[in-house]
Image 1 (cartoon, rainbow, N blue to C red):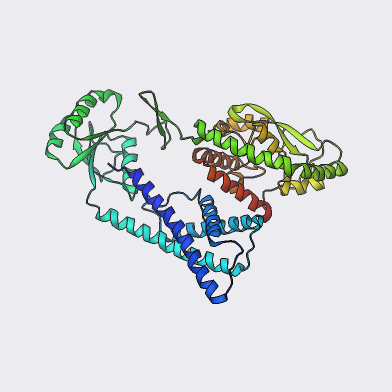
Image 2 (image 1 turned 180 degrees about the vertical axis):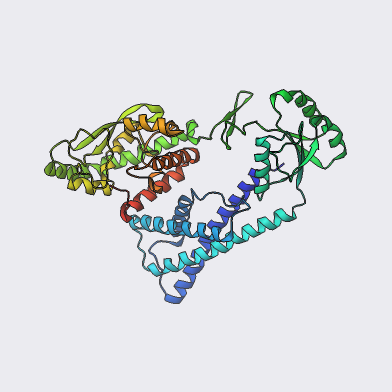
Length: 468
């Protein structure tokens, strides 16, 4: 049977494929019109090359799009806003790529019109998909009826999840429990004690799914219920009792034949993903270190030496992967001082040199960390490494703070591109940074890394209020 998650994935795939078709079709149609009306091509390369570049850039900018199809609460205006944000990011990223590619854009007006048309058509397309999904689910004749056994907090959460998902295939008839449970939704009918399960199911032939979550002292019901399901063509689903003490989202895996519940899904726990990220880091950092970095080192290093006394590099011990300390490199942006290992930089920090203030705002001071990337201490994208004193302090103050050290720290990260860069004046700012770092760890893809790099480059040119 097709599950709710599979339906969501199918709808998401249809949406992405439709986006790419619309993106290329709009370009092709507008190009045909433009060449007939104005008798010249608006760009210097072939149409196929332009379509390829647009498609790849769009996929990169859509990496963190998020799922908007499986919730009943999302509105049409929210869908349109998502499309608008994606189009803006996409157009800026694509413009940057074109600037460095050598392809001449003969008519910028062509692309202004193109991106506007794309926004309108994609918005209509998304709304149509949304309406179609709502209509299909409302008329779906193949709804699967289910019963619950157990009425604890976790079953209530499961009931809410089934009710909030547009693509849910289940309709819950009611629940069995020792006594009626006040915690459970009043909309779900109490069917009686689990002892009456077999008699009830023998009369309700339309019910095919049984979701069971009984406490340890009710375990005597488990074997008779599972045996009945096996002998009467019913699907039995065990629901872990994780309503208390566990987060609402956990991840299932197997160790041999034993099922294991994990607190989170970590893509980088897989060897192949770590290998891919490491190769990506080595290629990018290696190319930079042998080409551009020597020139930057000569220019920046000379100015640092001429404007203040002290070394070119500032080195500091930071907390890395699995809590292991490593020596982090930066261009020195401050006068040599005794507070370097304990105090964060502030807006009008008197320790900063004039040139140091500039390289901090432009992120140039972070470039030597690509040496750390090449060595393997850091990654290009990941949680920013903190001073040892900060790790010690915040580990005591912030719940799950140390989780961010399950992956390598990065030169840039999801938190830094989403408003959590710079000084943390309040504890809530560091809490926001930690949540963003954990989100990145749970959602990592190579496309997400590319998106964060793109956002970092945009922030360098646009400027950022927390860059000091």
